[in-house]
Length: 136
Image 1: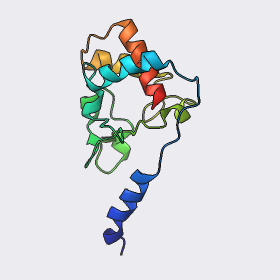
Image 2: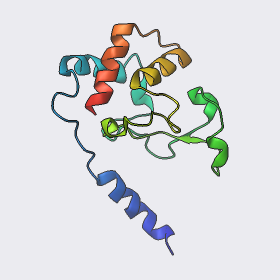
Image 3: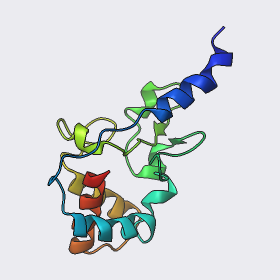
Image 4: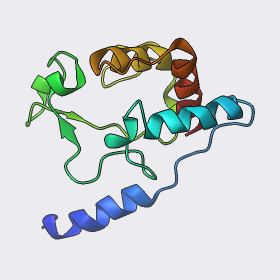
C-alpha cells in the first residue's frame, strides 16, 4: 500500500529547505577556501553531492569504506551506514557528530577522513574545510 507513495515521500523530504546558519557563526573567507577543498582535494563532494550534500540513489556504505567499526551498522538490515546530509549541519553540534556521536567536533571528523583517505590536508586547510561545513 505504501510502495507507490515512497517516491513522492522522498521528493517531499528532499524538498524541505534546511535551516541556514546564523549570521557570524562562520568565517566567510575561510568557508570559500573550504568549499574549493570540499569539491576538490578533500573529495567530500564525491559522496556529499551538492546541492543536497548527500548521496543520490542508494546512499549506503560499508564501515570499512568510511574507516570505522561496524557496531552501529550491524544493527541495521543491510549492515551499512547512510551518507549523512550536511545541509543545516550547524544544528547538530550538540552530542557529537557521525552516526553515533563518536566525533565531538567537526575538526575530529575532518581529521578522521583526512587520515582514512590519506588526503594530506594541512592544518589551515582543515580549518577552512570546517568553516565551510559550518556554512552549509
